[in-house]
Image (cartoon, rainbow, N blue to C red):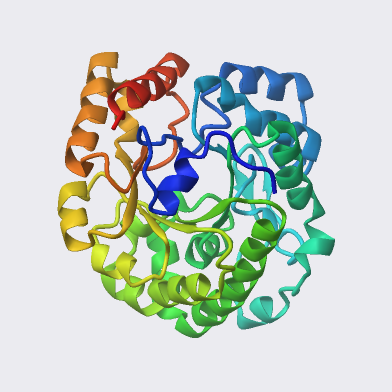
Length: 343
């Protein structure tokens, strides 16, 4: 693997000194970028086709480079590995699964697959990004957590309008839920290790519905998947656990992840006192970038750095960029982060 010229993020991940706090954003490649929206319009294909096309996915992944971010995350979807398993989603425009999971037989019918054979496009994207960047920036891979994928599979679509229904299913159909999560955990380990072998310098696990999962369900179903995944990942690349607006820092610290990407509900100063050696990522509120003024964005970044002391910190958001975020606000966030993040 080529020597990385801008290695700030990798240095923080390895507890080495840096000249400033590195910055990148979840969903930095995509819907807030006018160049992406024009490219998508000109292309005309559905999202799942764009995700599966290495050439276009590489081009989209690289668009945020002009913002000045310190890492490139591959343009992909957390649902990607479900297609070779026989539970593929199509986008219309949101994700749709024709047969939501309802029975144990559906779980047993899921197909074990080899990512090297069935997800070659993901490997081509990661390798292609490293080739295009020529060591300029590190490349990040990612996967949806087993519970995040289960939410989609049970809902049969984006779960946001069906949260009560999904949570009721998890509680009432615990045997099906457990079997599904066990299958997804094994698959996710293989998928993330495949990404690391394909050139990802670090990988992030997205627990995208952590903010709505009751603590008992989290402890019973979610926490074991995190611990199994992080204990089984290759040690050649650091791992990041993202838990959307979860206040359960004690459980996150037990996950085994190298880095914790925390929500706005976590005070970084308090978190560092609790775990002085842990690296924290986050946690500027994405709503401030979407709806705030440039002055408010500056203040939010300043507050975040005041909490972290610019130590063991990767600046990011509390969740992905919201669709209606003005692109000039995204650029302002990066500019301010670089200016105020100097050490």
